[in-house]
Image (cartoon, rainbow over all chains, first blue to last red; front, side, top):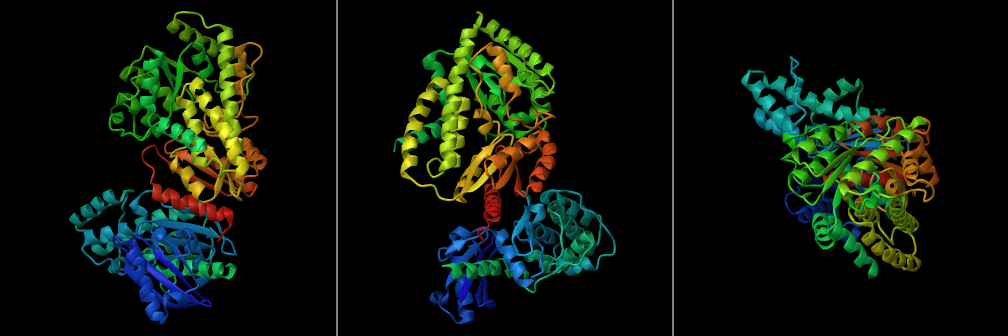
Length: 259
Length: 380
């Protein structure tokens, strides 16, 4: 059986095609203004890679902010369910999932069968989402991909106290003017980000194994800040950005069996 | 068809409530006494010949409010006061503020100073509802309020007038309870959104007009319900101060949920019981108040709110509970832990959502409700 998951995110639209429990292909495009086109394009990329046509796919499930705009999907699920299903697929012992995307972050506690027991989603604030780190990397004039590596070289603890992304940016600018090293500022940004995510994690009640997914899982500095703060090792998937789409494809496989 | 026309009428009235009241005032020549939520004895205001109008907050800009109130006062009071400062409550002849929390206590003086009205009064609810003296105190407070209303009217309010008003308000609550029960049996017949819109309409419409329309609606709904069958729905309880934003009910509707009970000031709590129609009417009003469903600022020690909520959930076979908390409502936030734990003990999942008048982020709200429904319904 072949199924597909489409994660129509705020920033990227990603597709995973699954065949009998194995990932066949993936597709990724920038979401842009036309969500429907982004979904079509990423689906076509994945189909091309898999050497399939749309007709070969038995069931498609969409998730993410633009999930209702994916015209070719059979149904849709929330980001939270997609994240937990995907994380559980990769790490069967997962009991906690942290998903930090571009515009939203969410944490969920799951039981041994992968069902969500409790969850929290960041409130209307950019300070707990990937865009915050992106804005800070712009202020530091370094590529976002380097924020993690750079922060790991930090030798001095600096604090960012503002709870708001805009005020935090002005704090970063003040640190730059005070000649604080970029690596220490990068570390402070990752610490601040981790602190906001950890407050959600603690509200729900942390459990092992904890899987971090979403774009921020690629930032090793952020992951280290999380591990230090939670005093535990976390599980990182090889491609954390695709876990939402993977989870949607997993649910699609479950649904297809019941059709 | 009749149902949809009536529902549209109620929705248009709540969306355009100031114009509705202004028009009522022009045609009837009556006086409007506003009140802040909740628990003000509307029957007494009505018996004095005035139209009690519940100020339910708004989504209007709050720029003018900052000059008078801190930004950590709750948005229900801030946005209600914003309406007054923008001149959108100029139809009021009076205002009664129930003192139930720090914010309502403090705003009464500020309101009096910034937007004085011919009749401005506080209504002081007992703090220790359990004590035997609470009832005696409340009868005294109702007598004092009655006296103030009599002064403003210029004549005495008779017991007969109060009894007639009580009877009118009881008939209204009965009609709304009937609709609530039809909704509970079959939400296809009347959605969560439309049900709560009716209760909100009850706060801002004269009972005589309201009851007339509600009677027609009950007849129409009874016919609709017979001809449509109820699909399986996830049964939910909502706990909090007020239902805000109303859109949350749309999200519950879309996700296949039915709200079967609440402790909201503008929900089931507003209509769940009647005032006794025999004996001394002021004593009956006091008894009604003493026995009302608890809320964060009006709670008993012997039967605290969490017991009430757990009982309601089991009685209504609820599968999940949504706590709808207004930002900066301290009393709600302090209660939350105990209430949440009480549901944890009986394995009913809960979701806490913090909302703000004019400040809720709809996309996120929708995702959270949908995710909770997936969790409770166990569909995926």
